[in-house]
Image (cartoon, rainbow, N blue to C red; front, side, top):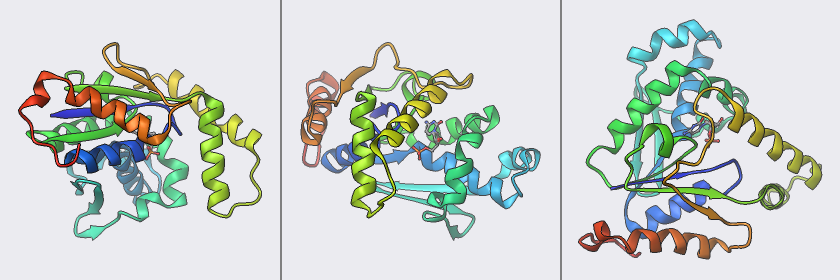
Length: 227
Ligand code: DC
């Protein structure tokens, strides 16, 4: 069974997808980690686009997803932490805009999800990668609520030089870039269930998704761990 959760930056897709995985026993698949893996390769190739593209047929990237645990490897080397480094953060949107990389990621996502119960998180999963997914959710919240959550996260991490207004401007800028780019723009699939979490608690938002899954005929003969 394939469950996809798409939505804009800061809507809480990762935490939600992981919680759904924990409660269903499905495996959480992080599509952003794959774009990050290719960005790691891009860095290894001196940020040279044509050398990266030449490597796409034999890239040696591998991802392991087990319930909430997601790990990345390049050959035998584990790169789970490295794909979250600042140098990858800075260039990942450039790599995610390359059509050839998107095609490679699409292929890997389909392969990794074949004959498995998975919950995947991304931007274009319901529209492009899994148009036939069993469940499609589009998670949103208004920009001010998303900015406030990001702001509180950063304050919680001990940052002091951060203003709510700057964070809000940044969220709006990313929304604009994500939804107007030519390749795989962020867009709700027509048949996705939209969940606006502006006025929902985390638990309410997770419960809504689980109820949708549980109340469908496909779910009746399935065993979930703790749904
Ligand atoms: O969710 P994240 O921050 O790990 O995503 C990393 C980058 O990959 C971000 O620039 C958005 C992009 N991305 C995408 O274009 N399509 C996806 N399905 C997932 C992520």
